[in-house]
Length: 96
Image (tube, rainbow, N blue to C red; front, side):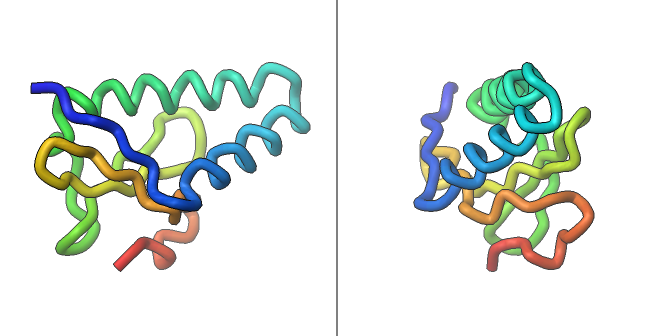
């Protein structure tokens, strides 16, 4: 089964901000960041329960190359990405 990907309000702007920040560090690094996100989104579309729970509602997938986590929940046939696209260093900001 393939799940639908839904970005909650705010998630897209968080991703865009990270992209811009990485592009300012080095041209092309933002694209590499987006490419890694796509790889994880594809994994989540096919097997969203593969990643661990962070609380009763949300799971997280930790990116391997960049210091970010993808916070999401599964609702029926949708994988819903939370707006709190947090850095690994500050996991206290995880959605409730």
